[in-house]
Image (cartoon, rainbow, N blue to C red; front, side, top):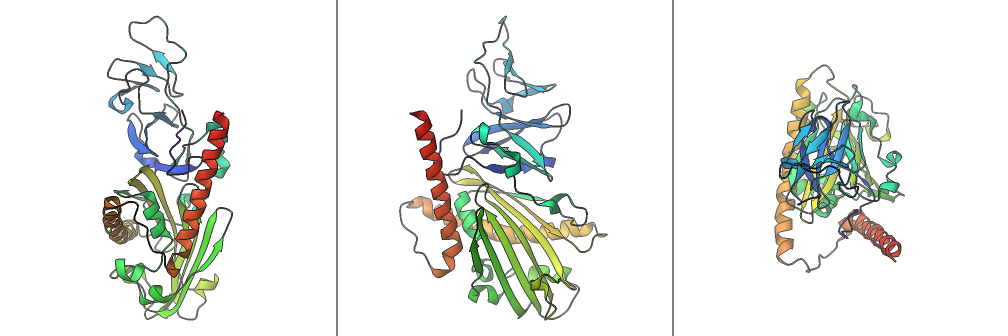
Length: 353
């Protein structure tokens, strides 16, 4: 019962939800990689993830109810344990062994719920990217979520493209330096590292309410993109001109650590989870909401243009895009993603022979 869709990498840990989204006594439903899945917490607080499809007549278990650590389908009453086994069929003395639903490997880590969508035997928890800022009180934040009516690939393209910032984010994140600068790119075994710096430029509008220094700034934006799971991890910030913020000295700097993840839902829809942690204003809880609101305002600008882009692409999906020099990072990741998908397909075909 493993997915074979060629549009995405399956052997990867994807962010399924923020941990706070799955609460005790309730079923949380979400589609990931075209697979309908339910999540719920058992009595000990741990999260389980089951196929949202009763093995009997394929009614969604998300329409069912929790009975202790088990879920009952409310079409014909079949009941399933948290490991996916069918434990009760009304009117039957025994339950055939073949009755059951898939249980997905799932891990709760750093306030996130991660799910493995590929072959169960390959689900190594050590492969989950580590971002300790998400559970470090010295880096407060509130996590965000947006549902995209667009392919995850278009969202990933956006992650890797600094040149859109002065245009899409003219009133929030963008400054003129982003349009003309070319970041340093370093292919890695996990994806790509991107380093972008600018000196003696105005602070981006979105950050002015949080800055404690006047005048122009030096800026750095350093990002690691992980192909498996489509996870972007960022270290960025601003410092007074000439104080070496981009070098790591970070004197008087306003710093952020960023997480973005684009989890495919279907071919043309996606789940976007993000967090903007900070190391300033630690005693000001109101800043959590203010930073989140500013971040969401910028990301809604991305969502608007990307969803419009998807609508145009869907009208003529075979029409090629013309690449430009600014596309080096995203083209590299698209090629590597296609290579991994092709490798997975080959392995599945070989196993089926």
